Image (tube, rainbow, N blue to C red; front, side, top):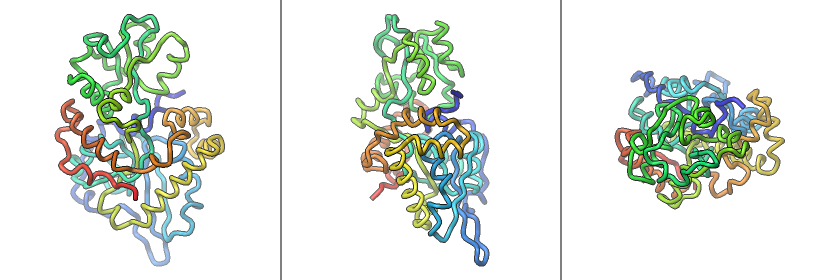
Length: 340
């Protein structure tokens, strides 16, 4: 399986995209395509890589889902280096991002944005793997040891926040951190004591029975926040756009919820449609669905909840302490649209 097929929020954004600055005109422009006489308005929704089966399904069935509305919806699949600049330049009305990245989007593009639907939650998340015969059994055992991880500049803060929450220390000093694009390989070759990685990269290592997981970001966040499923990715848009385009936002949410319901009844059928849309084999989409817990996710968590807001009020504090963001947002509730 290609390495890019990972948890939704992991591949969602690379920090490097912030090198592209938005113009003042872009921050104030209308994102949706203007209509001409007799033409429908077009909304554009973007995602950085087409690996989310539910999103793929909605894109494939968009002409059906939005047939009764006075608008059309265009879905764009961009790479991680172009999606955020496209949003900043006014080419996307909605795009997908983890909440941890919202402050950066706001700082870079001077836009007020909010997340209004969750496409992924941490129910496992990145895990720390060690050899099965390793003397290191706990997170505390690994203090000062060699741990491989993907370059933190390509991550979105989950590992940094987790170690900060669990130990009160920065991940860079708690471990002898080896930032590499081949973290799993470094562990397999015995060059490090542990690797902090996530599915599906973890799958072959765990299935080999030669490695085991001893800790995860879920462990840290469950203890810190008492939240069993922290929202870590979903649709966002400018708050002004959400306020003035309620019919479209509601329609997009309803379509996504319907696709999710279909997935929970028959994931293979949804994956088959999604595979034709994305070009990604259905077997790989099935693994992604398992990683994201899409089949088991209860209806109550297929929406933004008040608990999500409370969790992220605490999460932003950890991200600030870890250095991932420069400041804690002053009004965290404004960054989320709680589903009624």
